[in-house]
Image 1 (cartoon, rainbow, N blue to C red):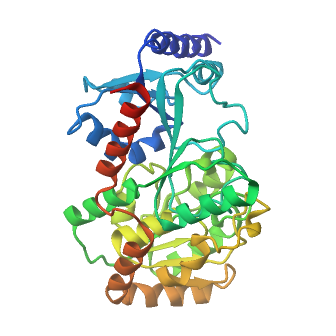
Image 2 (image 1 turned 60 degrees about the vertical axis):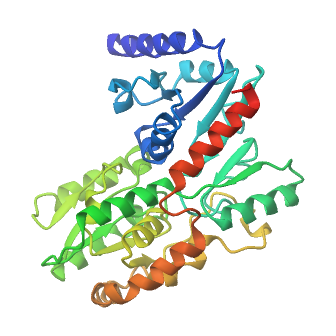
Amino acid sequence: MFAGLRRLGREYAGLRRFLAGNDRPRIVFYAEDRGSWPHFEPIVKALTGRLRREIAYVTSSANDPILDGNDPKIDPYGVGAGAARITFFETLQNALVVMTMPDLQTYHIKRSKLPGVHYVYVHHSLVSTHMAYRKGAFDHFDTVFCAGPHHVAETRATEKLYGLRAKELVEHGYGRLDAILQESCVAGRKDRTPPNILLAPSWGEHAILETVAERVIDALLGAGWRVTVRPHPRTRQTSPKTLERLARRFGAREDFSLEEDIASFESLLGADLMISDWSGAALEYALGLERPVLFLDVPRKVNNPEYASLPMEPLEVSVRRTLGAVVPPGDTAALCREAERLVAAAGACAEGLRRTRREIVFNVNRSGEIAAGALADRFDRLFGG
């Protein structure tokens, strides 16, 4: 009980400190959790560096490293994920608010009723907007930073279909992809024996970890591969027993590891092949490291039952065979055969993956400066510079 009271006290102290600055316009980044920083980092660094802008960074994660930072241009606030956060959103004013959390206004997080607040959404995945997200996930943002042409086309088609007001769209790019590209250049390519397979699925009742993970891992280990499992952060929240079961069964093996720090690139860089389902991490891996992905054909991850009303195929569906291969989830023999084939063909796949990257992602290696410039321009336009 006392720990809970202390946490609540810290959250309201962060809120009070933030509200004390409400009389002046600010660029405010809101982080739902620690996973937001990899998407914000290139934007924040460009804003506070070359553009010399100050920002407020509000986070719901008590262990967000930003809270212990010492950059004089980043003013950090911890407000938790409870009542203090709701009050934070309700009392925002004179702010350009940057978020990676969708569903604004749809559930308990609402737009402020106070004046002078402009909401900017930064995509935290390359997947399409109309199948993996809930209906209306982006409808209440003023500006959307689009990762690629598909986000522009889908947003405009959604506005037309449902009679929504037109949002400002920025051809942004994808900061996490840029970071992976930079890390891969530094790390280089290493030959590993045996090769390492990264199992990095999405989350939900039909995802790999919740359905066929044990059979898949058993087959891969039996074939002599090393296996790293990198679950989606939501899996720890929604299916903790699944991860505990995998740890009990495979945790003692030297050729198996469980990696839950998605902010780290280590498991990505160390993998010769990724196995995934409908996770956006598959696109990051293939386009960032120029290595193939093997997809298990579990049922689609559909959070919007009306997604087919938009006459365009979701990106995560259309590019699967371009990024690698697809096998049935129950055919472990086909899984092992395709894994071996794709690892052997990785070098030959690289040019095709580079071409796909150029086609579907804006401003590769420049997304941070593009976003920072767009935010600075909007802030000056809204608040007079």
